[in-house]
Structure formats: structure tokens, C-alpha cells
Figure 1 (spheres, rainbow, N blue to C red):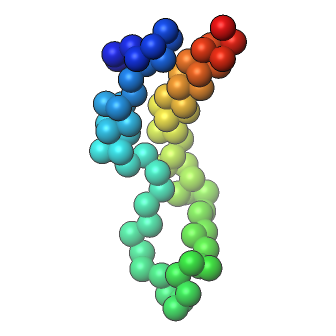
Figure 2: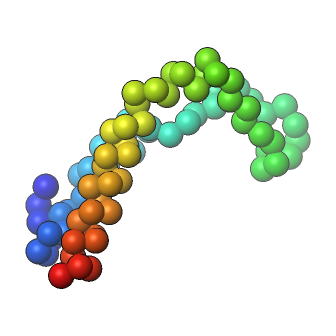
Figure 3: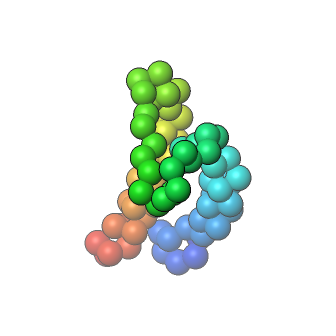
Length: 75
């Protein structure tokens, strides 16, 4: 990663990679009700188990980003 200033890295490429793998939940089923904004996405234990092991990478990326900002503010 290119350093922008002090300990602030340029995360442009990291954000592009993050968007390309789409690590957020995606629903393949169509909404059955007319009001799509108020419908719920119910998650069962089997679907939740599919996420185990995949959220840690996103979490570490967010921690890395937060840590660099905190270090800059601390100085």
C-alpha cells in the first residue's frame, strides 16, 4: 500500500478488492411482499454457519484502517 501521509495508507486498491469479492450478505430470493423496504431477511442457523470463517478478513481490514487513523490522531 502506498503511504499518503505519515501512517495513513492509500486504501483505494483495498476497497476495490473488497467490492469485487462482495463480502456482504446477498439475498437471491425475490421479496414476496410489495413493500420491499420493510421486508425482513430471516437468517437460519445453517445460513449463519456459512459465514463462519469469512467475516474475519473484513474485520481485520477494518481494524487495520481504524488503527492507522488512531495512530495519526494520537500523534
